[in-house]
Length: 470
Image 1 (tube, one colour):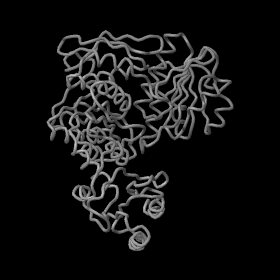
Image 2: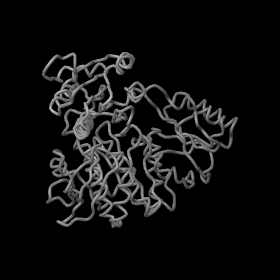
Image 3: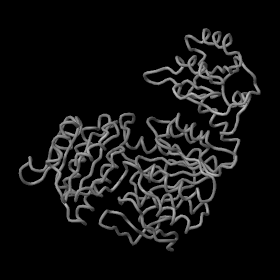
Image 4: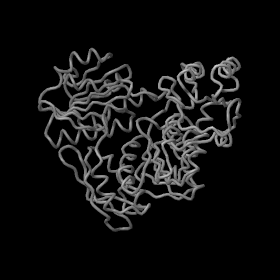
């Protein structure tokens, strides 16, 4: 982060300086009192189970340069008196909301630099698409990007503060749990080029329909339109037509159809469901790509990344090589060979869309390698009133794909279990465990040599340790 003057912060935010010098320089922001460093400026965030304001005094004692404080904080006056008396050099800034303050500072800070901003949203595939783009663009210039799960109103500003004078690209993964969040994050990041990977029933707990999810994701287009940029869409996703009808910005579709601006053909896969294909534009082959990670869905992540960077005039050979060098992140579509078994570790998270994609890969791997297929599936969360239906749908999908054995874990997954129907005795091909401890005791008896095993569930299930028992 480059230094910021207190006067700049005041000009970017609806705040006022209670105490301190307008010309004081700030070199770092922190939202975590537990990791405060000397001269950090502390921004106390209010969460569901905590109020960061309660830790302000502690951060000052530990060397913080200053802090922001909500004007309605109950102990504000006592805190100000304590700080003035004991730490007279400390900056104190008052604002109406500290989360908004943090976002506004990040937005103002980013405007100091000439950075090409790319935003990626969608119900699945955001991180993989981001990784493809980052590996391409970092060969052309200093690239800052969202790391870990920094895709919300706290993580995005933290990412922006990594931008410096020599930064050329900002790649932001935009998450969503409510309406207007994508619009807000796209505005903060000053997005000019964007991607919507796909639309599915994730976070239905916060929306009335999948159409609402699609339109909320499409909010990214508003900032793109203002910046005269382009939005890249998965043309084969059934919600793309709805999105296109409701956006004003320029868009480009990517998919299997030859009339799309970018399309793929000559697609095939190896025994691990790792695909290769031709990428085409305007009826002409650009290059052939061989992915390193399994899953048909990753073709779409790759062509969206390739299409956007081609539009930015990146050398096609650089794009091809960078995509082919990108590997799976931990807990995402990892192939593990263990004791004559093949394990597809996709434990990072799950929603109905990504669950089906993972099941597709399991079906391909087991068929190509002539192995028995076992799906170990945990609960999917944040599906609201549709939870039962969505879990039942996964059970039916397993049946349609010819999966041999289901091991279901959790309260919601009983609905997967109930709808997974195969001819023959039901006890021989499906199991349900309420608790992971019960599953761990039995899984060694279920999984045998020569099995292909998928492990997948929402992050709260933390299913990755099942691998140790297989």
